[in-house]
Structures are given as structure tokens and as C-alpha cells.
Length: 398
Image (cartoon, rainbow, N blue to C red; front, side):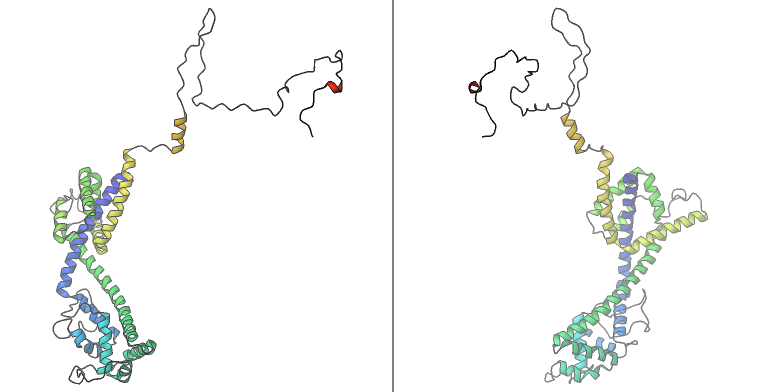
């Protein structure tokens, strides 16, 4: 039935996906901590934004400005060879995040005072950064495309320096949204590679696990109980996930015979079936543990609504309950006694099960003597009564 076995199998599979996703995400974070790919993606996006492909012009001046230089250690070195970074590109010591305000203030300061930090640019008697100073010295950027963008920001600010900064921040944030999407796609590809490697290494076959849970009631009940406990606690670490997946006692790993894993014998169909199961596991890992936790909670709600209907009958409708309350049992009258000297047994007819209330008598609109029939009375022998002796008339029109 869909409401019992299939739902429990789905919960078990989702719980396995959660554990695999946690392990893959932890491995991905470990690789990121070593390679620092986020910094490489950010540096490449800034080079594209400032139209400095090789990182030798304005991008270099921006990273060496005191506003940005304090965000990382060491010297600025462009990442990669000028092309788009990959999932394995090393970011070195480059910062993985630059605030939009710092970027805007740095660009405005370079335009007004020049890219080099020296005694002249750091002189306290130097004129403050203003709209006029930026416009007069904008050639310090030595980048015509960025100069034009900055001039547009100055024109639209209508003399407000804070508005200029906000315009530059909006330009920077729009570029960061684009590079964030590129980084997420790269992360999904990395998680897929890690998930596929983990699925083959540990033999985590989604199809085999689903069949095993469907035919094994004890294993299905155990994994549903563990999934229910995990649904209330979304925080699972790498060590916890590894321990839980080892304790599930599922057909996972290579220390089993072919028959125990459901292959029977090694054939092309068995290899294809296992490859498909590994691919499903890897694809599930790319969605991440938060996604599968949300799916698990929704399926648990569906299961809680389906299970009670399987254990109890459907209740009668309210209309049937009301009709049942109005019905009464017929009395057991098997014999009727007659008056007089003799008695005879009569088969009494069954009374109706529903008692109907008697309708009140209909009142006649006529007077009390309207039912007297005088058609057979002979009035020819009666003496006529004079009009002055007749009783006064009642009713009529006054």
C-alpha cells in the first residue's frame, strides 16, 4: 500500500540521502579550506568588472589599496591564467569576501587621489574626496570603461556624494550576484563528483537500498525511527553521519556477496542497475542536506496523516449519526390480548423503527354548527316565526 510500505521506504531513502549529503558537504568544505576557491572566483569577477583581464591595471591597484589590502595576507597575485576558474583553482591568500562599501570607497579614492599610496596621497592637507575632485582627477583610474561608469554615477547622484557611493555599490553587488551563481554551479559539480566517488567507494546504491527496505520490515521500522529522531534535530556533523550510516545495517559496502546486494551474478544488467543507483546517490548529494531535511519533514507529516486511517475505520458522516440518534428500537410485542371471556393470539405487525410526530389537528374556519346537516328536516309543517321575534343577527356588515 502507498500509505505504509512505500512511504516508509521513501523516508529511509531520504534519511540515507541526508547522511550522504552531510558527508559530501564536509568533504567539499575541507577541499575549499585547502584550495580557497572562493577567493579565486571573487578575484576573477573583480578583474572582469574592472575590465582588467590580466590583473595588472586597476584590479591590481584596488587589491593593493589599504582598504582591501588589509583583508588578506601576502602580496596580490592574480589567480589562474586569466581564464575562468574551475572547481580546483587555488585562490592562495586572496580574500573570499570584499564588502561593497569598501569597494566603492576604494574606487572613489583612487579616482580622486591616484592609485599609489605615498606621502602626497596620504597628506592630511590634501583636499577631501568630493564630487568635484573625483571628476577632475578621474583619469587616475587609467581605465576608460570604468571612468565612464563612474561619470554616470556622478551625474545621476545630483551632487550627493553618498548617492555616488550607493551607485557604485549597486554596480558591484549586481556583479557579485552573477559570480555567486557561477560559484554555486561549480559547487554542485564538485558535490556530484564527490558524491559519485563516495557512492562507488562505499557501494551506496539507491535502488538496492530501496528494495532491501521494501522487503525487510524490521530494517524499515528501524530506519524510520531513526529518521523521525533526526527530523527533530537538523544538526548532524560529519562524524555523526558516518557513525549513523555504519549503524544502519543496510546493504552498503563491498564486504557482501553478490546475492546479498541483489545482483545475483555479475551481468551487464546488474552493472547497469548498480551504475544507475550510484548516479541517483550522487545527484541527491548535489541538492544538499538542508533540502533533504525539508523533504523529510514534509513526508513525515504525510505519514502521520495516513497511518491513523490504516489503523481505524472511517467514521460515519454527521447526517448518518443524526439519523441514528432519531431512530428507536421496536418493542417486542409477540401477542395481543383481547377483552371478554376468551383470548386469542394475534400476530402483531412490526412497528416502524422511526417514530413520527403526530401533526396537530387542522382548525376549521367555519362556526361550531357548520357540520349540522338539515337536508332531511321538513320545515313545511313548522310555523313561521315573525321577523320581530327573531334573535338579533351576529356578524355581518355594520
